[in-house]
Amino acid sequence: MNRRHFLQLLATLGVAGCWGSYKAYATTSSAKARVLIIGGGAAGLSMAARLNSVLETPDITLIDPSNEQFYQPGFTMIAGGIYSPDEVKKPQSACIPSGVKWVKEKVVSIDPVTSKVKASDGNTYVYDFLVLTPGLQMNFDQVEGISRSTLGVGNAHCMYDYQGAQNTWKALQEFSQKGGAGVFTNTFTKLKCGGAPKKITMLTDDYCRRNKTRDKISVTYYNASKDLFDTPYYAGRLEEIFKERDLNICPQHRLTGVDTASKKV
Image 1 (cartoon, rainbow, N blue to C red):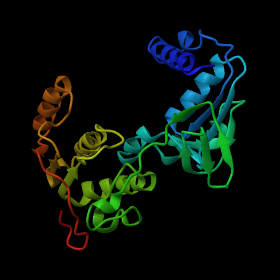
Image 2 (image 1 turned 180 degrees about the vertical axis):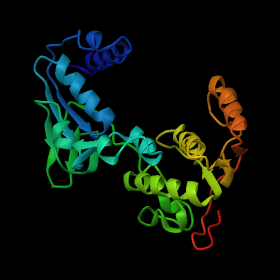
Image 3 (image 1 turned 135 degrees about the vertical axis):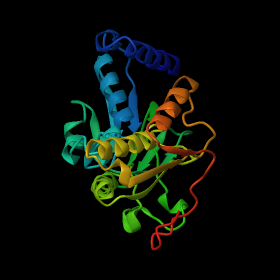
């Protein structure tokens, strides 16, 4: 299989995916190539599964060190009390498509000139085609006063983290009972889901309304950009909902630090 053929195959898969699973698997290829996928999240597993289905003689290796697979969009639902923690995870071994070789290691270097990848076990893996789906790295320490290990201290939470989402749900219930000021914010950098910060804000509001404690809390959402959402089609209606629910919006504010001792942002 040459590069052009491989890219055409990927393009076909991408287009077919829009038309449902039947057409996604309708294309087959007798091409032979060593395909190496770095990253075993939703994107990496999806690519591995599709290529494994359409290639008649697949030779696919996936490198990922994780023991468990998380449905990360569900983290917000854990934080809002909709999902239980166990509903969004399963063993990674149960997610690897049959026939795909899984290397349970981290990638330490990539040499595109020689088409080689070195893993943390010291082994080198040669490929014909490389697919990069490593995911995002979250640098909590870029916000002064917090780190991933200290999430929850001073009632400062983050639902982008599995344990953090569970802590958020516990804090949300206590917040509803005791009342007080709730500060919600997003980040100005790339993030896993732009809608999630707005979701947890509205889930908090909804939970308090259903428990008849809404009058005990105030909610302010500090948004890094001018608009509440990047897509104008949704931004206007979303701002209306926030206004209807008395959710205060402060645009063009970036979170730079958290004083967990005095509970100030």
